[in-house]
Image (cartoon, rainbow, N blue to C red; front, side):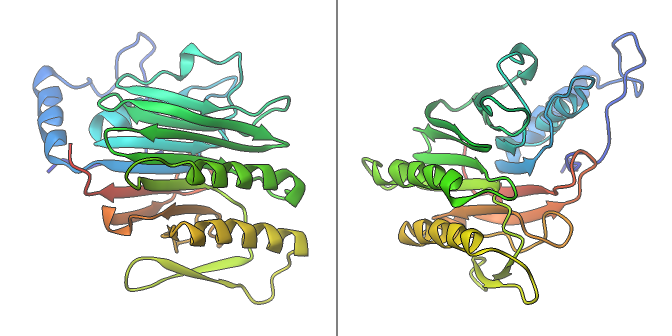
Length: 281
């Protein structure tokens, strides 16, 4: 089986004339990758990418293009994309469609979803409220709602509440058979510790000797209340930035995820979350 590299584990280098310094892949190698990928399970990745494209560099996007070729990636969810209305064509990755939730009126922030072209989706929500962002899609063939949320540090309840109301609205207006729900994001609640149980779901507790405001605690309580009411369970225990688990994954289908891996990345001070699924093509 082909081995895969974690996002940001290495960088792609060109020799200046558009060709790869390592000689690139020949036709046989490309065919082997495609054949191997058909045998691999779908994966979902999430990361606070801290600038998908910057003013002076597209190295992250270039790496994603290679990474998505070599791995069987169904969904790529990102926060802090730093995209805006002036960045459009440069975000394309062959074989994927992109759904964006750019920050409005301010720089940086933003959310994005890349979905493999084998599936179609409806962009059911895109929202930006005072540095908080959300984007959500519905993948009909998989009967799946996939959401990405960014809540920056020092957010007040007045700013996060509209995002929470939108989440409630999306979940409340689900029609037909109950869909699979996947909510990923950078929520920035460093005072919460997550402990994984035998069923791979995580319970939470407040870390001792940590500082937080009543407003921050209320925001977490409201978020968790929505998740609990909709039978959504958080599955990430590992730290995702320094010693804190800031990046979370909520789902109502824990059994869909057969393996969870959290790895350091040179592209961001937030770690990459890679989820292997049992979703069949």
